[in-house]
Image 1 (cartoon, one colour):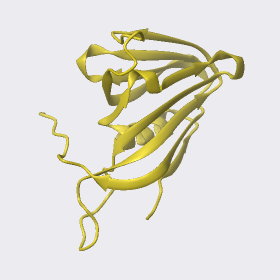
Image 2 (tube, rainbow, N blue to C red):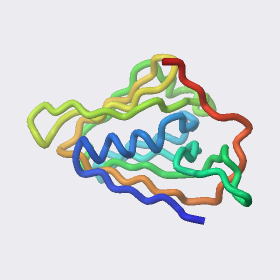
Image 3 (cartoon, rainbow, N blue to C red):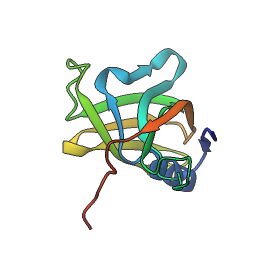
Length: 144
């Protein structure tokens, strides 16, 4: 099994990470901002878009992964009920808005209108699979 490990240090890298976490699901309680160490962490079950079908490999699979951002100065949420830790979120995309390069805002966009805005000194993100894969019951579908 090949566990995915990615690092993002600029907006192009971040777009690659975004593609790999599209349709990841997580609970509100799996979001954690640690201001003392300037880190934002989220544990998720990501859909494995890069998996190719094969004789011994399921085509639709998910893996537990961790995505964390370092050098985070602040975190704000919109449309996410922090008082409902068991509410499930579906991550759609991650984008970056440069304000005073390399500083800017990393935006995590969720289905249903939820968003998290991270005020960052610069882009410094890591995505890593931390567990085995399991068969997903369905494949996410997006209308064009």
